[in-house]
Amino acid sequence: MQPPLPSAPQGFAAGASAVLRGARFLKSHPSLVPYLLLPWMLTLLAAAGLGVLAYEHFGAIRDLIWKAPESAWLKPLYAVFAALLGVLGIAACGLGGFLFGQILAAPVYTRMAMRVRRLYDAAAPRPASGWRADLLNPVIGQTLKTAIFLGVHALLLPLHLIPVAGAIAQFALSSLFTIFWISLNYFDFPLDTDPAPLGIRQRIAYVLANRRMTLAFGAVVFVILLIPLVNLFLLPVGVIGATLVHADLRRCADPEEGEVPTPAPRSDPPTSR
Image 1: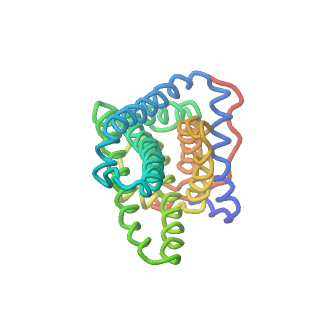
Image 2: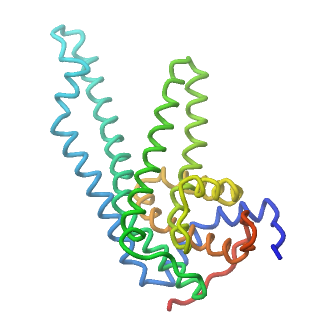
């Protein structure tokens, strides 16, 4: 028999507290620390690599957009343009490093999610294994999610052509989609801990079916990602928190039903195994 669906506040609370649960679980299970180091290194290396490329080609890109003017009165404006282009380049390298680092670290996050679920619930079913499940599928899935993220944001850019209202609409829609994408991105790894692999449509359906929890989770992560340095720590901790919530969902779900209820968070084991 399927358990009753919880109230909306319970669902939001489960998602909003997931990151904190992840941090507490990490503290009580220090064996998970090695899983944190490699994603950080990959993200920083990806950002640094893009930064070096951008630095080496900055002059060519700048001149392609606007060559240095000969008029003396245009030179201050050109200097401002070059400075803004540099800031935009730094932001692009940071975003590119984050996205590319996520692709490279996808197998690590998947393996960490499997380890977390096993520590949290020893009775959990064993996931699929092998080089496809452990390496190929996570990289392909993360690449597809990255393409979706960039594609949707590219489609929203023309809204800036509409004065004022377009910029407001673009910001609102972009923020809402980013929150949804964060939820999809983080819960994608716990979904790999299930025995049967899911396609991208099924993963999106999972996020939407549990939208109280996933969107609350995405909103909290969205805010934390805006904090420098803290956002680097959040990446793996968020995966741990999402895995704990997903384990609760699967534990409460009726296997004969397709929809998964959102339970209130339960207390985690106090000590590591």
